[in-house]
Image 1 (cartoon, rainbow, N blue to C red):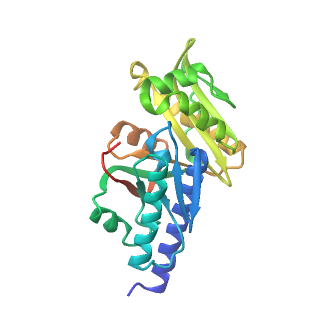
Image 2: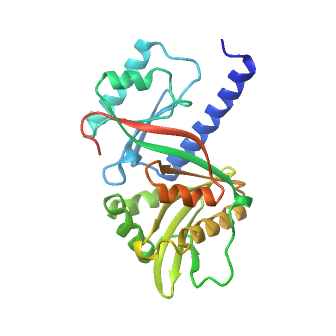
Image 3: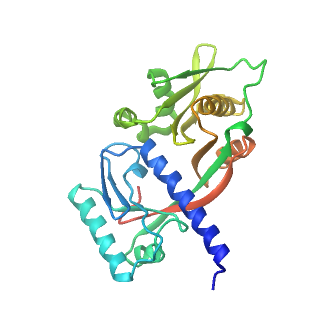
Length: 267
């Protein structure tokens, strides 16, 4: 039996993780969202595939197996109506117990392990003097910002991504690092109820190893503090060692890990 104090701590962590992931969902708004008993069923026809995954949150009380299966059926019907493969974001501390196993039993493939990380705004290193790289912060992305994002990220940063960014309701900042007149690194942040999420971090290959990513993080942290955020969060794939090192140097630490379950072919 779990001690009451341990259960309370686990519940607090789960609630914090859920809240951060829902902030991220608002910062990456899908074209269509249906809420079904706490689950976010999300459809998007052109942006990055993870924007169109199920966020299976809900009450802490465990669901009976039959009820859990019924809810998965409803999600599958949603994606069938919209012509997409059903995909679930699985966070053990925040999802219903038994969901991952149920999906595995239905033939869903596990993929894309991700680390959800957070850092105190005050702990992110600021801008260093004497660096020839300059940072520009703007309220909207421009062609230069998108050019770097598309060059690094490819298919997930095409024309449909402009529509996604237009749907973001929260205060946003778009950072560009310039080497002379050339934009070499980008990132964006969205402020939401005391936190700011960091997204779209990208550095051109020729500019890596020169501190451009750190400059982006420092600028976004400064902006976040000015917009009432005490903490930053971000999501990074666990098989990206360069990004993991960058975020560790900036003071980010893992809150939890999660992965995806996809019906049929992988994205």
